[in-house]
Length: 178
Image 1 (cartoon, helix red, strand yellow):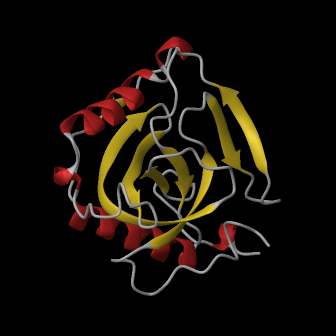
Image 2: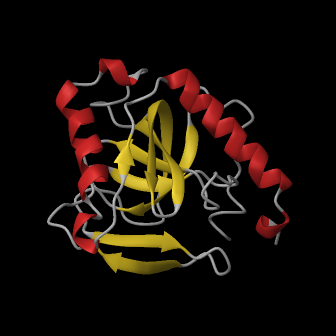
């Protein structure tokens, strides 16, 4: 089974989608899915003294503007073992730009975590949570000599639109086909 190609995303994405976690909350290790084998590859250890503020992964069968699967930050109480599938509900998103171009990060909550499952919009989160997410993406590449610019949080409706575009993008890209 290939985590990018073989995990089915339901037609209705409003309630939840399966997100494959690559990086556990609290980690400094930047893993990425290898599109050919489906295995995790260590991209790098973060240079800065920061760690991932949420479980970080991707939406299967998606192709985002940066050429990779669509990124997700899944808020929940505990770190998750890499390659675990988490049922996540999108509540907003962040657009960032770095040396590779534009990159969306969908902010979601784990629907199976009672501490987060009641959130339906990022505006409901404690303000400090969003400050931490924004700060992480502003800082995590600084010691590599790279800049990343993070826009303000966007709402759930825009997040769902970005998700639909990434799912459509997967279906039209020959590079993603087996």
